[in-house]
Image: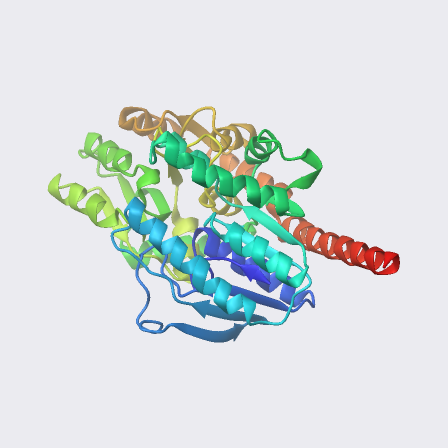
Amino acid sequence: MILSINYWPEVTGIGAFTTYRAEYLAAAGHHIEVCTTFPYYPEWEVPQSYAGRLQSSEERNGVRILRGYAYIPNPATSVKRILHEASFVLSSLIRAVARKRPDVLLVVSPPLGLAWSAILLSRLWRVPYIFDVEDLQPDAAADLNMLPSWALRIPYGVERAAYRHATLVTTLTSGMRDRIVGKGVPAEKVSLLEPRADDSLLVMDPDEGNAFRQRHGLENKFLVTHSGNMGVKQGLEVIVEAAQLNRTDDSILFLLAGDGAVRARIERLAAELGLPNVRFLPLLDEPEFRGLLAASDLCLLTQQASVSAIVFPSKIVTYMAAGRPIVASVNPFSEVAQCVRESGAGVVVPPEDPEALLGAIHDLRGWDLGKLGQNARACARARWSSACVLGHLEQCLQSVAASAAGHAAQQGAAR
């Protein structure tokens, strides 16, 4: 059983991660149930097809999907997000506890509060759980000064309990793993479980990009794109500010595709500045998204300066699998920056610096972009292929389940 607040049909972030993991395991012959809520991310709005329900059950690609109610705030302020996560923790626990006992639990955090569900269900069913850390929420709250020091004791306490009772802790990057081990968790208890690249992106037809350009009237543009979630952490203002500095050059078009909490504000900013070189598209379906990637000359990955150095957004995996050169406007000591530099996939510039961002874009126009793209794809194929990443996940689950079964057998023999 998987507990995750995000799942299909969400196509960005944790929803995509959990979906491909669950469906891979189901295809490998395992019985998989997912306790989740109704889709809402990144728009922070439940689609009409799901609106008004308290719970539902459905099946897709061999996975049983059990949905329960969660409060979806819009706008998503800090207090409202706490209520949002708390409502899901409660509803998912109610849905899970009524189901048949699984062999193992995979619990996806955030929300960190799912740790309590994991501990309770693990004890009730006497099964082990894996705590999969996609984001270190207490550290993020501390880095962004979201909570006073006294209030931070609560999430840090929940985090310690989650790690202590878990049979295995998994996380996305080596930096996050080091941070968890540094909190006193035994190193042998923490495993790296990186994001998976969409294998279909590793082979793309240039005609997909040409067709996309024709559909959107972009045939003669040097296309600089950002895709995915448009949230606060992305610091998308830097892209609009770079476009403002380059407004007299009509050969470069900045294209932002996706949705999120700040999209409306970023669109208003671009409109107020009257920028002819900025265009917005909504979240795209798979064929259109492939076309966008294939058409892009450069892809942008931007983050606010305050974002933790260990944050590793999934879009970098997507960009690199598609063989796109990257300009990363991020903390130069971050894992994202390290990945871009070491792979040879692009360049890194300081965050929230539009002059540096624009300068890098102009510089890269004179580079061998094909070579940068080849470097990006080679790294993605070696590091994030499905066989490598999802095979490791399956091994982790089987190992945890087998260890628990062996321990139970020993206890039974002793009695």
